Image (cartoon, rainbow, N blue to C red; front, top):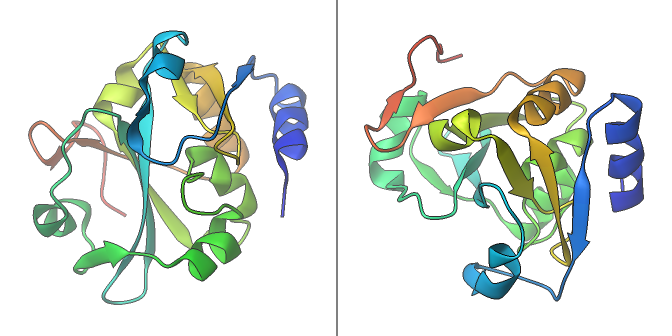
Length: 173
């Protein structure tokens, strides 16, 4: 599994500019508001899910986005969703609870996880994610995030959570 240092080296290799801020551990949305206030860009919440058919999902949304899991599955084309357990999270993304991040896709070399990206984040100038640990926050531009995803072979499904629909031009896989 790749570490924070491996992630930073990878971002450098693919030419994605990034800035990382170290801070005390943050485990849930709502914690660390003072940390977020000091870091520009869109802040995120990330959910690691498993559907009733065993498909793994990673949802990255703006931190204030409301996600209704009971209504989400038909929008993204999944079976009913529930939270994935810690062992599966560590195996698939190389992270533990509180550290779930889109950057964890660097560890999903088998492409077991389908990635759903909030349209708010897709449209943001810059976005913030934990760099595989919840003791830091890494900022990249939206283009930098797209470059990272392309480099790890992931095409996001962009969802407009305000409308609970796949964003225009995005297809369900």
